[in-house]
Image (tube, rainbow, N blue to C red; front, side):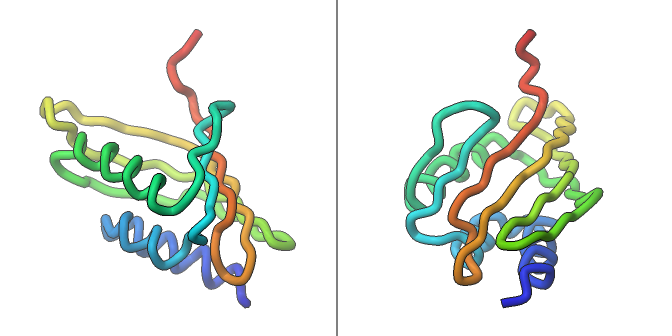
Length: 119
């Protein structure tokens, strides 16, 4: 499995706003996704539901940029920025780092690091 190719393909899905399709293609059925230091959400179905909830807040997808990518032994890291207009017609800009652990060509654990605004 070429992890570099897989993570680059994943970025293309996201850039095109195909987030749910990306999850079906790139995430294991028992995947764990974690926001900062929160408890992980376990299972593809639960994570799809969580992502649908996030996407319901998006009125217009403006763009996604992978600023930097790192590939190691079974792990990838992506620094990214995304822009969208929310349902309240507010422009939203988000930056984050995602650390992804892979097994058999699928992400089994992903943790997002970002400024949640909490002080």
